[in-house]
Length: 435
Ligand code: EPU
Image (tube, rainbow, N blue to C red; front, side, top):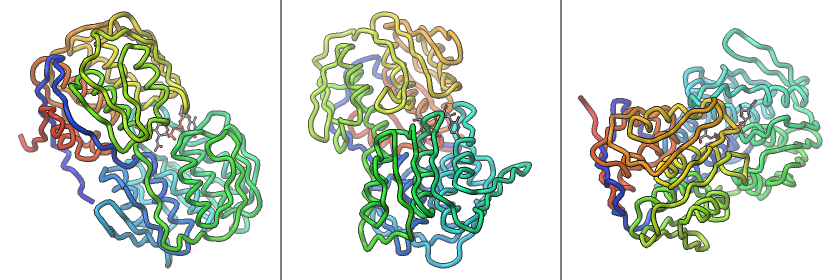
């Protein structure tokens, strides 16, 4: 997988709010689904094939991490990978990679369940909050693992080399926590019950596939998941098909609401976006909802009305769409409170929007007040996290004048060749490298 140079940046010419976009944006496989399926390859006795994998840094990095511990990976098609876990595997996660990406923690569940031990550094990721891993460690302990804390990480051992089924209640719903313990439970002895489990659609998508390969998981997609443990799974040539990225689809929908002459967002699942679609409709955006598409035409009455936003676990409003939605609100009439309930550090992007001309008041680490509409001016920006990065792209396209977005690596982590795809619908954006 190609690792993008960190010096690259995007040059964007804004349309000063003119509706200039026309065409179809195809949504790629989900950033927060494909890497989890790659981790699940550790539950298999035979090669697992992942289809519709997005060409993004986070997937590439997780595949690289799996390679480093001994998984045999092969690119078998344009967006298809085969992962085989035959042979000896390392149970210590490579430090640099694991620290770079919080998502690497999902590998610990299947590794610990299969080999009875795993060592990991404290995982890294985006700068969006504290992001502890206590829920994972508590869950593993309930399943009979001993956890030793080192200065820079943890060593985990399953007593007698095997995890035991357990009843685990999540005091806070956690997406990767649910996925990690669900995968661990597939190879544990006995039955595991996960209560107050996360409901995000990536979880039932993974469970459904694992069940076709011999797992026994019931209730994924509800708050109680029951997993009967057993032996290694068998893919038997079946493909895990990565579901569409609902956050990418939602970001495209916000962009289309602001700038579409006529834009269709294709290859998506509108049922995963009900909270965003409902809010945009309340705001006055007309959206044509198809079976696997969303369409916005340019005959919208402007300005849109402001709507309050409160992030929430699925099916509520996703925290990952909070920043793009704030950009939308800078263009809507009225005053809106944006309440971020999941992470405490997810407003780092706000100061740059204010420099562009937005009227946003920070109330506390969880709440901002957005007043609109305000015209935005192009600026030089540096994206603090990947979702904020896409929000900056939207803001720069809406703005008047030129913008430069640095730290493109952050955007490549989650969006495949974003500039090429946006250019194809008429956005003036290009990637440049060098000084
Ligand atoms: N939490 C704990 N202890 C833990 C784990 C989580 O207190 O051990 C807290 C977190 O601090 C947070 C809350 O639980 O306040 C929920 O966090 P969650 O564990 O659900 O987040 P995550 O699994 O680390 C996933 C996505 C995020 C997305 C969140 C919330 C992946 C790889 N990441 O993170 O995606 O924001 O769920 O939906 O699936 C992104 O894609 O940009 C991104 C950050």
